[in-house]
Image 1: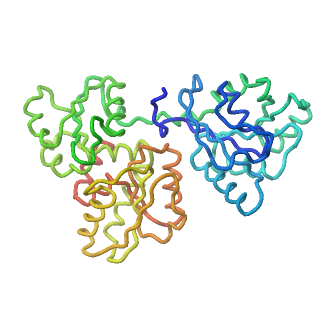
Image 2: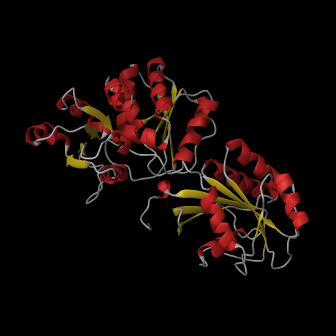
Image 3: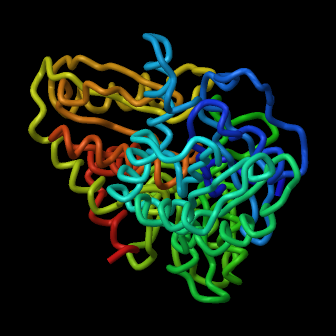
Length: 399
C-alpha cells in the first residue's frame, strides 16, 4: 500500500480556522506525530500532502491546509491555496474548536462542498477542554447541515467514531473506475505495445503501463508485452487472437498498420482519458484542432514535472504534429505540476497529459474549468489519434 501512486489514493482535505486542531487531528487519525503541532496559530502555511493508510478505506492522502481565517495579504494567498484543495479532494473534514462556535468561515466551506457535491464530515475538536452540549450539536447540525462529531485530538476520544464516519462517507465511486478490466472477459488476451526509447525510464515501465497490466491481471485476463517493432510478428506467434492491442500513443501509426482490423486498438493515454477524466468530452475537444489558425494560443498542460528528453512528447512532438496539421506556426504555452492556469479563456485549445499523477476528481475539475472558460480540452492520446486519422478506430473499444 505504501507504493500506491498518490493519484490513486482517496484525497481527504482538512479545513478549519487557525488553531482549530487540524494538524493534531491528523496525528490522532494516524496515531503518529507526522504533522507539526504548535499552540501558535497559523503553523500550517501551505497545503501539505500526507500519504497514509486508513483501513478499510485503504491508501489515502490527507491534505493539511492553512487556516481559512488567515489575515493580511499573505494570509489571503494562503486561504486561496487552501480553497484550491477543494478541486483535489474526494471528501472534506471541517474541524472546529468547541470553544469558538460557527462563523461565516465554516458556513462558506460547507456551502462550497454542497455546490461541488463533496462529502463532508463536520468535527468539533477539543472537547477535552470544553464538552459539547446536545443543544450545541443541534445548532451545528442546523447551520451546517451535518451531524457534528465531537472529538479530542489530544485524548483520542471520538477518533474511532471518526474513522467509522470516514468509511461511511467515502464516495463509493472514487476508485471504482476500471482502466480496461470492464472491456475484457476472463481469459482474454491484451497485447501491450511499449516502446523502449529515450523517454522510457531505465529498468522500469512508466506508471500507466504498470497500472494497465495490473488491471488486466486483476480481471483474470492475460497481458502480452512487446515493443512496437515486434507487434506484427507477435500475431504470427500467438495461437490465440488478442481481444485488444494497447499501444503507446507515439507508436499509434505503426500499431494501426500492424493490427488486424478485427482486433480492437487503443492507447494507454486514451484508456486514462476515461479512467481519470471524461473520454467523451476529451474526444469532442479534438475537433477543435480543425478550427485552429496560425498564431492561435495553445496550452499544453502536464500534471507532473519530469526531466525533458530529446524529442519530448509534450514540448516537441505534439507541437510539431499540430503545426503540420494547421499549416503554420502556433503560440504554444506550457504548464506543469499541481498548478493549473487561471487564464484559460486566453487559449483556443488545452492539450492535457494522461493525468496518471493526479486523481480523477482533480482531472475532472480541470476539464470543468476549461468548459467554464469556453475552451475545448483534449488529452495527449486522443489528440495524437485524431491528428493521425485513427481516432474512430481508437474509440471503438468504448462504444
